[in-house]
Length: 120
Image (cartoon, rainbow, N blue to C red; front, side, top):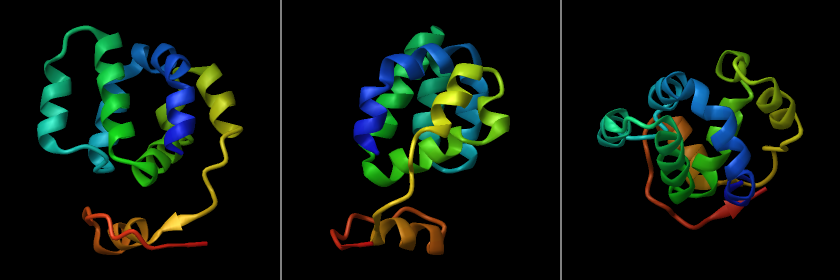
């Protein structure tokens, strides 16, 4: 998923910059970013720069957070301001291999350090 995010970064910047504040609220609520990261992003005044930094943060967190972010973009209330994003995200397959850390994070409702075990 991190490769999908990276390959689509330019399109995502264009689609997300107009509604960056709502996107920021969603990633905070879904705990894809920390409070410190959220505060830093809120302090940036140029919408394009906010989105670029957000995508860099998400990408830097690895495969599972990228998958969670892309799944988040599939929600109609998240992608409502961009018809192009809504159509594109439907084509992104976010199913597949899940890392055990992802399942543990969901179960425990908090981040888990990488454990390196994978299963399908």
